[in-house]
Every structure is written in structure tokens, then in C-alpha cells.
View 1 (spheres, rainbow, N blue to C red):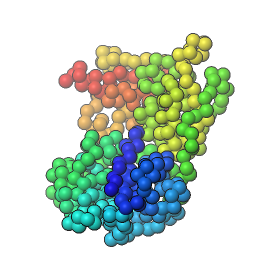
View 2 (cartoon, helix red, strand yellow; view 1 turned 180 degrees about the vertical axis):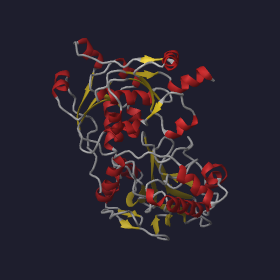
View 3 (cartoon, one colour; view 1 turned 45 degrees about the horizontal axis):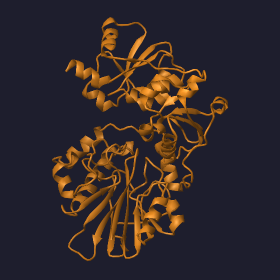
View 4 (spheres, rainbow, N blue to C red; view 1 turned 90 degrees about the horizontal axis):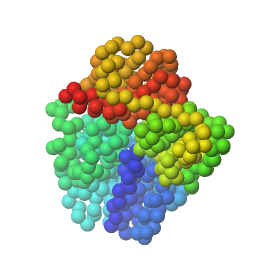
Length: 450
């Protein structure tokens, strides 16, 4: 008997391979899905079923691709706001046998209308289920967001509450298998752990401690979440069925002269923020590899062409992999070698870093033509903000940069300086010249002011 968790870095996506008696099933596969076939074959298993907990908003489903590779049935929930072209519809109470294992379907709407949970039974031990795949309804330390239906806020929050009770009624012994972990855009308070039980969550998950259904609904309605533009692309592809990922996750290597001649929509520097700030090709933006999944979908639109700039080949491959998983894979090439390029006389741009003393001086002096721009999310800013600063969430600069005056001097801040460098890089790529980054940002400010 097999149960394997497959984690997708960046997206913090969790999918699962379960198997018994020569058969196997995959829950919520990602787009680059050959790994599931390889793992199953290594265990002598044939993938016969693919279960989708819901129409994902943050990644391309691998279910239609894996179906072609294996011939497996794909099961999806009712009410997906369209026709899931590649799947059959599963309903409450449906059961599927995977050798000694049995999967039973629970309809669990709230995060999305089509949401399902899949309850895992071991038929050799029939006294209650052993696990539940909860998708984005219940996480370790959090529950699913309910902001995808803005005209039905209270209704969908109430649906999620009812679905959570249905899941919890399975029993405290049941092991929890969510579709995302900490760092995912699908929740905001997930624990760093990726293991838990329903009993532990019942006692410790803050989102399960409300005294009433109405209190839970009130809380969810007031939550603040952001929806990057690429969510709409994921919604469409996960109805139609996305194409298979490129077989080679390595962009074409460009020379310095080729880099200078190529015309693309975005020149994306995926090095770390301090490396980018120290010297980068004019016109490039900064999306460090570890931040691509969170922010690329704000700034790069469907079909737009990209060239990647990296420190090494491994970084190029990692960056392309992250982009492919969210269908932003019109990648024209990659370049490695900023330092050698500078040595050959290639013009570079820098973004200065400033510290707390300089920020304080500018604030106290009321410096003309200068703005301290906070790019954290609204919840972070509500907890603490520097008086005199202005606020635009980093992702929303994709459009709201047009509201800013390119003639002004902007110091960009966030919690540490990481997102601030992403924001500064984007503004620089849009033609802003007077930019610097508050190094340490709110962390440094609190360290100085207690």
C-alpha cells in the first residue's frame, strides 16, 4: 500500500499518489505530471483514477495530460462554472476502489462551488476512515479563502462553514491531506507543518474556533485577499484542459549579442534582490526564482514573451519550471552572465539601498518630490505602518504604476526589502528613474523604534 505526497515548490501545492492491489490514484496533479507515472510504475502500479478536489485558481491542472498518459478516469465535482471537458462528474456518496483502499466523495462547496473532499478508507480496517483529501477547504492551521464569488460573500462563507463541519464529522483520528501548504496564495495562516489530524485541527486551527456559524461568516467576509490576473487564465485552462508542459524545462541559451537584439514583452531577471539591485540590464524587472509563483502572474499576461536572466543554468531551469506551471511559458530564451556582460562594457543600471536613518531624515524633513511607498498587503499595513508613507500592494502596481508620477523620487518598502525590490524593478522597467529601496524595511524600522 502506498501514499506519497508530491510537493510543488513555489506554489506550495500538494498532490498525492495512493496505491494498492496493483492500482493507483492521483489527487490534484500538477501540469508537469510524468512524475506520477514514474512513481507508480516504480511500485508496479497502474494509475486508474485521477481525482480533482476543485478547479484550481493558482496552477494548471495536470489531470487532462495525465489522463492521456494513463487512460485513467478523471473525477471532478459538480457546479464548476462551466464544463470540465476532460472529466466525469462525481457526487456525494460516490465510491471508488483502489485495491484495498476505498475513496468516498464528499461535496464540500465554499472555497469553490465545485469543491469535493475525498475520504480515504482502508477496507481491511472498516471502523471509520483513515484520511481525507481536503483540497482547499481545510488546511493545516487555516481554511480556504471564499472571495471568488464577490456577489455571494455571505452565502459562500456559510457553505464553507457547513463543509468544514461535514469534514470534521469524519472523526478526530482522520489524517488531513490538504492541497496546499504554507506560502500558498490560497490561504494566509497555514502552519509550517504539512501533517495533522482532524482532531488536532478541531482543537488548534484558529479558523475552527468561532462560536457560531455567523461569527465565522463575518470573519470570512472581512478577510482581504488578492486575485492576480493569471487566476482567470487558470480558470479557463482548468475547464478546457491545459496542454502538456514542454519536455525540456531549459530555455534556449542566448549570447550577449542575441540578448541585445531580441525583442520580447518582458526581460525578467530571476536573481536574488540584492544581486539585481547591484547591477542589472536596463529595462529588466526582478522576479527572484522563489517569488515567481507568487508574483509573475501579476506582471506577465497570457501569451506575452519572456527572456530570463539568471546567475546560472540551474536558476534558469527553476525559473522556467515555475512559469510553466502557471502557463506563462512563452519563453524565448535565457541569459547567464551579468558580471561578464558588464566587463564587456554592457551598460548596467543599479537601484540604491537606503537605511532607517535616511528614511527618518527624509520623513522628518518633508523632502520635496519624495514618497515612501509601502507595497505590503493590506493586512500587514493595518497591523503597523510608517506615518507619512503611501500604500499600493506590490501586485497591483501592474496597473497602478500609471497612477504614480515618474518625476517623483520613490523609496520602496515592504517587510524586509524583498518585495520592495520586485516593485522597484517593475517601476524601473516602466521608465521610473528616481528609485531606491528601504533595506530591511518594516523589520528594520521596528528594530530601531521598538
